[in-house]
Length: 66
Image (cartoon, rainbow, N blue to C red):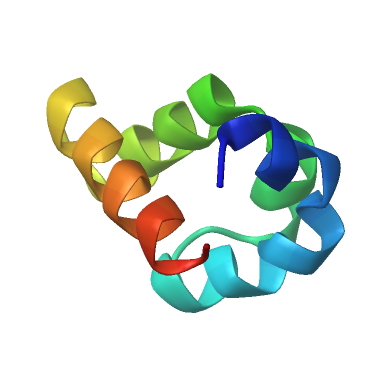
């Protein structure tokens, strides 16, 4: 599944993202609106991760939700 599909169906994927990154609030996830860069930024901010680590986590998460 490509990211455009995730972004287009964000309301469905938002719950899965909340399960993966429990420290992200619903407001955080609403603000990302499925935008990958914004999601990675929110993960970096909440978890203190590097950009590379956040990108890797998002890649792995997206691969599991095909």
